[in-house]
Amino acid sequence: MTAAPIFLTDSITCFQPADTAPVIELWQTCGLVVPWNDPHLDIARKLARGADLFLVGRRDNELVATVMGGYDGHRGWVNYLAVSEACRGQRWGRKMMEAVEVRLIALGCPKLNLQVRGSNADVIAFYEALGYTLDDVVSLGKRLQG
Image (cartoon, rainbow, N blue to C red; front, side, top):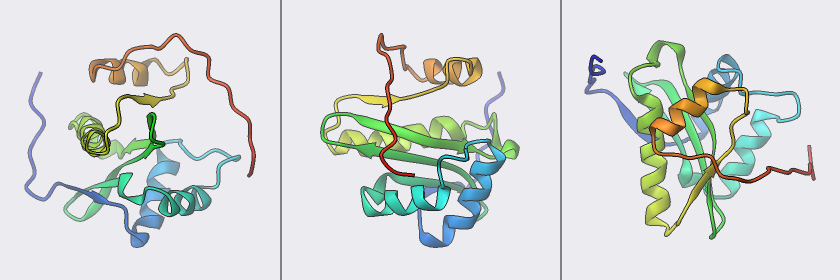
């Protein structure tokens, strides 16, 4: 396996409001936007709670990756991990997960959870390569707001 190229202009920083349009465009391109989740509202909600765990990755000042972490004092969560098609295979997914994990550890978070559709074998394999394991749980949900 060939090592991913290293670019001196790569950076991971906290989301800024000016990132809204490119973040939503990336999420749409990656198939993460669904009719029942308004991405503008998801961003606004995140900025109101734990904005420092909403990270963006840039190469040459172009937004190429995102991850939205959360911590409730008991468990950490990850949503909206996305990497542009042009940057896949260059370790951006791994870098974004490492960045959010470091921040969660600093907050005292003992365990990180995430959800992946059972049919998404490639993404499950990605997370397993990062050390994540399947938990013997059933995920339940109840929509409280749109």
